[in-house]
Amino acid sequence: MAGFRIRPYRDDDSEAARDVFATAMSEYAPSLCLHVLRQPWVLLLLGCTFCLLMASARSLLLPVLALTLLLALGRQLLGCAWSAYIERCLGADLSDIRGSYTDGGFWVAEADGRVVGTVGVMPAGEGGLLVLKRMAVRKDYRGRGVAKALCRAVLDFARRRPGCAAVVLNTIMLQHDARALYERLGFRRQRRFVLPTVYGRVANCTVTTYRYELQ
Image (cartoon, rainbow, N blue to C red):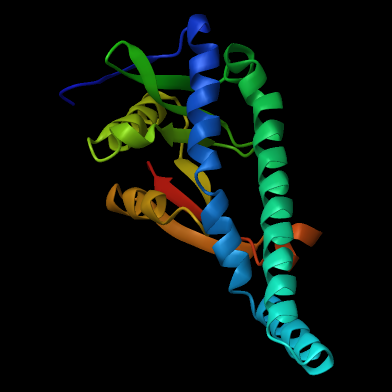
């Protein structure tokens, strides 16, 4: 815990907490593009486009330029879609953290006089369950145990909450480090599914649900 402290959210943390979350989530954009690029239908589309242009143009330059433009366009579209998702989060519970987490809790990690991490927990809509949300840590403060300390703050809160049976959370396929952390802390994988939206199916966006039993 040296070098930082975990404390409850204050109203003057709002902008800093939103910035930590938005910045951390923005870092997944390149990984998302690579994930989509590896999908079989994308590789097939690019391969067919290259072959058709190669056969018709009888030149390597046109197919290469066309693929470069397609990749650049795809990168831009995915970036816009991911940015829109982040904006939706910022416009939902993170637009009014105090009001959104009235029935749960929200914590920040503070180091060097600024907010460097966030996490929240709220009722999951089912009896005895809490859902962990908005776990994020600034890149230059990772590897110091900040995320682990934030997660333990949530678990300690859940243990003190009367009738709480478990803490649950969702991760996407890009969050490899987060999944490893949750599993080390005792969370158990419940299920894995493709996001039930058009974008989720096209991009093969998978969600893994974890659960930490308290009883």
